Amino acid sequence: MFQLTIMANPNQEIIYKKLFINNEFVDAQSGKTFVTLNPQTGKPLAEVAEADKADVDLAVKAAKKAFERGSAWRDMDASQRGRLINKLADLIEQHKSALANLEVLDNGKPFAEADFDIQCAIDTFRYYAGWCDKIHGNTIPADGGSLAITSKEPIGVVGQIIPWNYPTLMVSWKWAPALAAGCTIVLKPAEQTPLSALYAAALTKQAGFPSGVINVVPGFGETAGHALVIHPDVRKVAFTGSTEIGRLIAENAAKSNLKKVSLELGGKSPLVVMQDVDLDEAVEIAHNAVFANHGQCCCAGTRTFVQETIYDAFVAKSVELTRKRKVGNPFADDTLQGPQIDAESQQKILKYIELGNKQGAKLECGGNKWGNEGFFVEPTIFSNVTDNMTIAQEEIFGPVQSVIKFKTLDEVIERANKTSYGLAAGILTKNIDWALTFARAVEAGSVWINCYDAVTPQTPFGGYKQSGHGRELGEDGLEPYTETKTILVKLPTKN
Ligand code: ADP
Image (cartoon, rainbow, N blue to C red; front, side, top):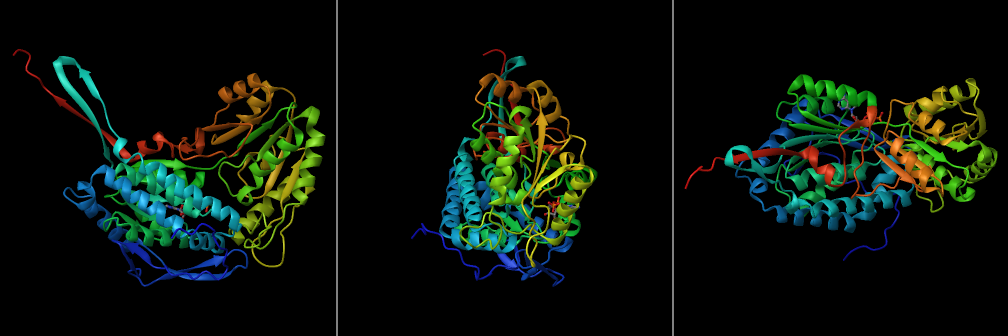
């Protein structure tokens, strides 16, 4: 029954285009729809129901009801919750082709990357399925001869707002820990990429999740997203996206009902290449650290710091590799880079490239838009980049590598930390002292040694400084979805 080989199909049928509320696909109350584009062509792909405040209210009402005392979800054994999550993972595996095709059509990433993302989503669901009946508190020898216990309880209705760069994977990062903890969910996918979340919603019904546990409300940030953020019955908002919107969400959440917020935001991550590396290997790791997912990755290693003795050779080899990077149709087997997500993003990247040129960085390759249709940008490398240049400071979210020269480890640590972000960092070296000195000193939520972007379901992920609040994945990823309750029993002092 399981489909072991997955099939690319640019004509994938788009079945689910409505809001998913209380286990039903429904039109928006207003009857409004919006168009999602195919970034490869810039042409309309599907018309999707557009949620607004009225729909968010209905979805939150359904999620609140599903969380009531005595509901099927609240009364369900934790182990059964785990079985449902595993069932969902199995269904995603069975429907992997459809999901991967939707992801390519809606987002533009190459089919092989979409396939990989969906496998990572499946792994994330399976990881958290195992947690359901292992989330427990403590027994505490409290003062006064009392018996005290703590329990970890689900926080309640959670609002989840996700971006467009990893649509299905972000669904799994949000749903899996929330479901494991026993919460109920209203998710707003990004307006650019609503299709795979709606398809996954259909699978949750098939898996047997009770009505109202999972709701999906496609729509725009300022309307549907904002309504979720300020809703008085939402106890927590989990957000992945830009630092700018993250700050706004934290403010609005605080102003409404002081709901809890976890944020996974932007980055300008350093990858340090020491002079003792195998050059070809280092060039390839640094290349993938920037260009994977067309540079549309919050933890992309976009500041490539290279030690001065190997700098020129490193740049030359990087240019050689990048020139070979195949850009084009994301359904083609040999394509490594598809289009950027939309025209706005493409224009923003080209503006950064212009600034790089103006501020004196040396354009080594790329630098232009690619092709005559869609939102493509050539893979681009700048050398002679200095720390104060805009391209070394701001998140470009596109296929642009800045190669920066440094002399010593102490110097590069200081320069790596000179940013308001702190999501990830990497170092490539054979010297363990250098690697661990850097790992301890760098201000980043993830540090990768001799690899990059090695995110796994078991390991926490999140940011220092303005890269976010809280952690996703791993045991830490459950924390934002639980409250700790202390129950203290007064015991008689004498028998
Ligand atoms: P990007 O710049 O990568 O598109 P954003 O941070 O703008 O990232 O968007 C990420 C998600 O946040 C999307 O789902 C978007 O609709 C949502 N969003 C944008 N603005 C708001 C807002 N004011 N309130 C709530 N959600 C928002």
